[in-house]
Amino acid sequence: MRPRALLIGLACAVGAAALLYVLYQLPIWLADDELGRLDTKDRLAAAATLRGQFVPVVSVVLGLAGLVYTARKLLLDRASQTVDRFNTAVTHLDSDNPVTRGGGAWALQAIMDDAPRERNRGRRLLAHFLRERTAHRSTADLPGDVEAALEVLRSQRRPERRYRAEEPLDLTGLRAPRADLHEFPLTNARLADTELTGANLRAATLDGAHLDHANLIAANLTDASLKNAHLRDARLNNATLTNADLTGADLTRATLSAADLTGTILIGANLTDAIGLTTRQLEQARTDPTTRLPSPDN
Image (cartoon, rainbow, N blue to C red; front, side, top):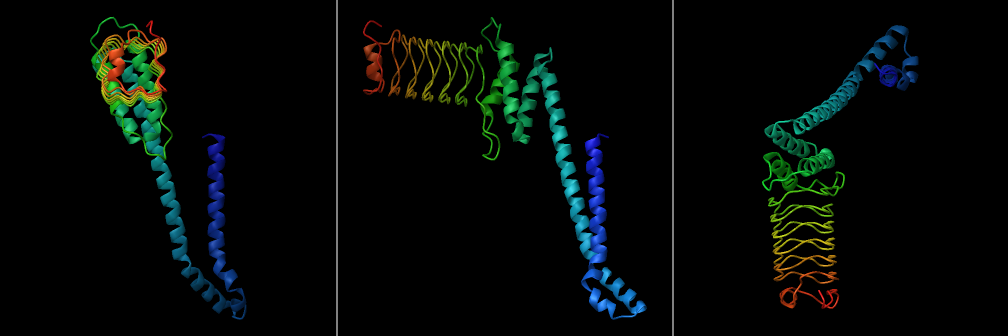
C-alpha cells in the first residue's frame, strides 16, 4: 500500500473513532447538570437511556459514510473500466487486421458516449489514426477501418456544456478522396494539405477551418459553412459550392476553375490572386464591396 493511501486510511479511522466518541459522550455532556443531581444508580440508568436515544443518529451517520464510500468506489471502478476499455480500443486500432481496427474505432465511439470527459482524447486518437493510416495511400478507395474512424468522428454528438470544450480536430495531410464527410463537424479543424478530391462535404461545418493547399477538386460543398475558413492555395477546380457560406474566407491564390458558385456567399471573402475565376461565376455568387476580388489578369 502506498504511504499516502496508508495515511489517508489512518486519518479516516482516527476521525471515525473521534466522531463515535463524541456521539457517545454528547448526551452526558448535554445533561450533565441534571445527571449531577441523581444518585449513582439513577445516573447510570439515565445515561444509558440518553445514549440509547442517540443510537439512530449514529446509525444514520454510519449509513451515510457507507453510502459515500460505496459511491466513491463505484466512481473509481467506472474510471478504471473506462481506462481498460480505452486501452483495449487502442490495441485494436494498432492491429494488423483491418476488421479489428474498425472495431477499435467503434469501441472508441461507445467510450466517448459513455464517458464524455474522454471525448477529446478519443477524438485526438482517431485523428492520429487517420493521419497515419492514410499518409502513404496510393489507392482511391478508402479501407473499411478508415471509413469507420471517419464515421465515428462525423456522428459524434456534442458534449454537454459542463464538460471540457471540444478541441479542433487535427487532420493535417489526411488523404481521403471521395470520402463521405457530409454534415461533418469540422469547426477550426486543421485540414492543410489534405487530399479530398471528390469528397462529399455537403452541409459540413468548416467555419475557421485551415484548408491551405487542400485538394478539393470536384468536391461537393453544397450548403457547407466555411465562414472565415483558410483556403489559401486550395484547389477547388470543378467543386460544387452551391449555397455554401464563405463569408470572410481567405481564398488567396485558390484555384476555382469551373467551380459552381451558384448562390455562394462571398461577402468579405479574400479572392486576391484567385485562379480561374470568371465574371460569370462572380455574377452567380453573392458578393458585396467588402469582397476582395482578383485582378483582371487572373
